[in-house]
Length: 389
Image (tube, rainbow, N blue to C red):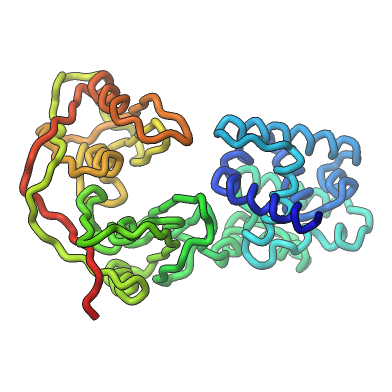
């Protein structure tokens, strides 16, 4: 029976792990802290109540409310799970998925079961507020645990971040800027995760559950819709890290060849493409940029600020490159628009559904006044093939 329970919790964890950080961020501060203490740190209800300055019954109610909110969050994304199953999955799997040391206690007082002093309680609450403020993952708890267990009396965000920097790079929400300097490709450890994160430099990347074409895209600094495979494209998925200053691209190319046996080379070919053109000028969705700069997308949503419609930057590629990746077809920018824009494009698409090409094309026209027209062009493609040696 215990084996079956563990297997069920493990399967649930695989489903919820990519969404857990976002789900936790929806909780109130006290609910968030209660979940961390109870399930990430394995504290008894009495200990949770003491750390939060409440009683055991109040801690139980707070945890139950938090679990119910998590259940509703996951249900809204197609995962029908009970609160008990979510609790079991987090308590049994979160520690293993987090960096080594997560099991360290929040304070020596809690470990020993002794009364929590006023000064210690104040320090604990300060740590928990920092966690809520940064929407930190479980690695933050490690930093707080180590510092407190050592008797540290001054706790700063910088010190906690230093411990997080030593965390393993292979988790569902990677941070390239805090990862070790290295280049590596490994078979993915998460079956249902597809996440690629860019750091502060063009050659600073971590990918979880990525295809070979995604790794080649980063290694060769290539557009996502302009990659061809000389033979059948492989379906296996991998985790990769590429964080070496200035030389990551070449190093990742070498690792792609050494580990998976693939190399890429540019080749000009006649291809079916989509031409991005202006159908209606002065559309309301093409707005002047505001402070800051960003470029990103999620299901049914593309947004950017202070970015051109098309560029060669992997960090701020513009909407043309997003469309190229979405349609998996080369997109040629023929709008003649060269300025930067603030764009917030939305269309009807739900989690678990196939890409809604028609809805996105209609949203482009209605909101941005742009259209995609099929065409045939001679363009440079990256041809990926098996290495001869």
